Length: 125
Image (tube, one colour):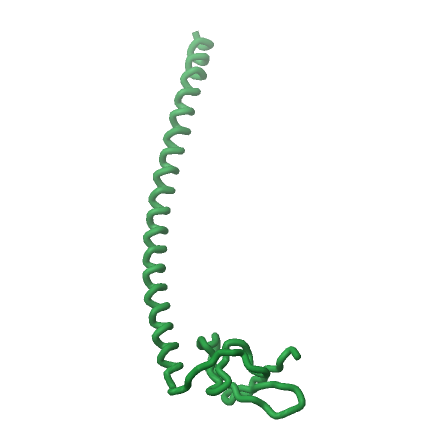
């Protein structure tokens, strides 16, 4: 009699284990849906903010370049790329604290320097 109850308990344990595994998988699936939805909502907010920041940066850059100069970002000898040799401003504001204003330097090799921070740029010639 004990052997029969033991055998019945083992037989019942398999479907119960499968049911518990299915419930666990379903719960994990629901949790993943919840977290993904929350992450995508946060991502949408970041994308909206990034667009606004990009527009603000573009307007600030246009205002910065509106100094009366007819800009030619030709990359003249001695100047860094995307710098107007007439006024010394870069096409886009550089990362960092200094908004470089480049001027041509005197010397045997062409170079330029920033009026504000004295950083130098030497051509690869």
